[in-house]
Image 1 (cartoon, rainbow, N blue to C red):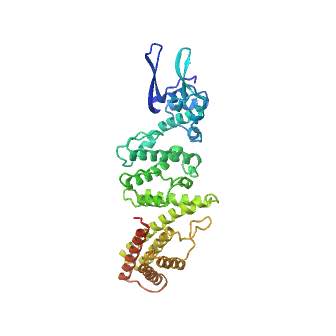
Image 2 (tube, rainbow, N blue to C red):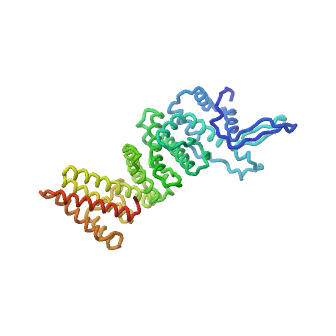
Length: 425
């Protein structure tokens, strides 16, 4: 690179250091790896586009959205580290970093291995982008109480505590998914600039990570769940694990209602996008993971919300309306149980809707009773509240306070029993 650009070398990690010796056996130059490799790459850059970006970086200038796109694509790609076992040259530890030691007119120095250059470029630009956005992502993370953890979003392991390292890995995943969403997502048009996009979208993901962190069991690691990203990324996760984590977050009192609403909306929007684009290859993922998770969470949440509404309406002496909500709480609880038992119908084409009427749902509840999944008393309660709701909604009749209270209690017991059976909550 002809233009001299001063880069803060500390942005690049150091995993190990080596020293070379002169002809007298004295130690001379020290190489810090992989930092020295990153710096060597920068010294040899000839691409004008990269040089111009580095000059702006050195001068701490603000980047345009187009420039951010360019830098992100430098490292958000499928370039993989070359397979060192396939190299013909003798393999040593330097090869792992993409360099070799050569003798240049009597001077021993490092040289980049040509096959490794694209991968070294990838690692180098990731470090630069992490530094450019450091203040932004650090301020967002520090809005939540993650303790005194040292924030590092790079690829190297930096914390010997496995729980803390899993949290750092989740930060990193949230960061990378945010950048990928900027490049290829469908909501970029909602923002005026990348800076505005990042502040909003990274904050959403960190809020969810915080919810997972605060509700995990002692000794558990944090696992990033890409609910704000393509649901295709959920492949490999387990239904019960996802349900438990997401429900724990939604029921965490430390998380704001706004954050919880964003999480619910993200789940619904992600499932809708997935469902509308499902094909023969992805249908299995929808049936075995996406639908079971989304349906159960939304139904059990709706059951709880309707129960709260019934209690509020009862307190306001709106007993007819309260009974209506008690019934719908039981209906949503029943649908959650049916989903867990794999008895709920598939979603309709292009719509997250299960086409089953009230009578069909009741018949399936009868089947659950006959199969010993739930006791007869809950079927009796369901029928009782259903009848009271019919009277409240369609007859010229007045539900009294004891009847309303009775329906609330039955709905509450029904919801608790469904949670017990499904081992959630």
